Image (tube, rainbow, N blue to C red; front, side):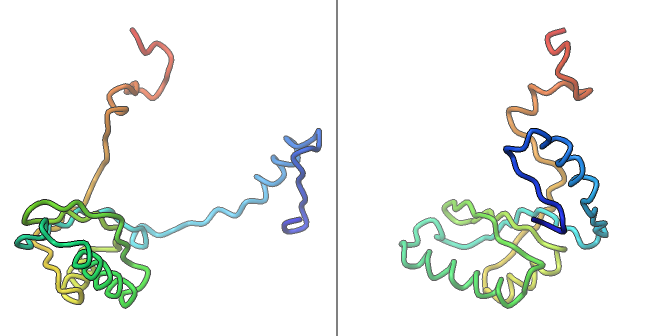
Amino acid sequence: MYNGISATLSQPHFTSTLEQLEQQVVRLEVPMEDVMKKYIIEREIPRVGSLDPEQVREAATKSNQALRDLGPDIQWQESFVAADKTFCVYLAKDEAIIRLHAELSGFPASKITEIGNIIDPATGAQPVDGSADNAHG
């Protein structure tokens, strides 16, 4: 039971119960300034690609501590390590908090780029008008 409404998948009238639930959904309006943005952070760190596993663990621990100190306005998703650079993917409220993380963690943010859109191989297979009909002309 949720807010006085119960729904059981085995009930034959599940669709009508689902419709009732959908009508009860509260839609949250989130101001755009509160939305996290995706960033790529390029960090120039000499010989980072040759760090041993313990050094990598220590670096991640240091970064995680800075993230905890900064709170929910920044999240580390993943990093790609090259010979002398890392490319880190973050969600953050703004660029300023990324710079603060770099300062607290001791890892430079050589270049910060906000991601505007994401594409992948499947993007080329999608019709421009959004319809699946007539995909082959």
